[in-house]
Length: 335
Image (cartoon, rainbow, N blue to C red):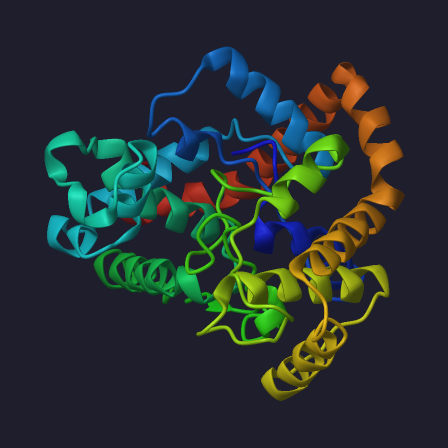
């Protein structure tokens, strides 16, 4: 949980609205509070961040005890060896200590961080989700999620045999292979944008310019789209293109379309310095936030409203997931 929005998360709200308006789709959003306590946090800051994020997403509340109950059952079905092969815990532990991935070992690893991929799988399977809008960096986690579903289905068939219980979820992100969707870190354009290096949220307009203007680029005059040779410049071009697509309510749907569009965008800056590109990126981000800033600030001030939305969302989530958990308990012999 973070009060700012990273590259992919920033594009999800508008894409989610499109999915929500399609028939036969039911969407669940959650502020994943159980995940965030894997590393030391300030309790008062967590409360503030929860309300900040809720004001942006109007997500459901995270206080659903069914998540932790099912996560424990899944933990009992998942081997240590399987979790040790997951790479996310090492990256997160390294980031918390400002180390590289090769500088950390299991000495500083707590059980919560080690098993959080299981909790992440729980967040999907508890709602019997069939599709998850994630990018390529989450492929390993989605594979684990499917493996856990298979393991539960094999282990607890029910008596008499009740058939498969949990579906095997698939990635449903229409932008996963679109280069403009892969927004990378402003500090290290070879790594994905994360909560440690985000673009500020709608309320922090003054920080947007300084973040973009301090982004890592290169010393070559004139901008070209070269993700390998000029990753920093390519990243700014992707951000600009992504913002413009969102602002114009359209998107390029294939790799070839996106690459062509990015090269076309770069031509505009072929004889200019980085400052021109940075200025246009700032302007595009500001334009993207223009329609939501006033509403965000209004909602953010209404603490009672935010808490009511969180409470009602949590109640709805509990009602939905209790149906799942009753059969889980029956199959596992816990009823």
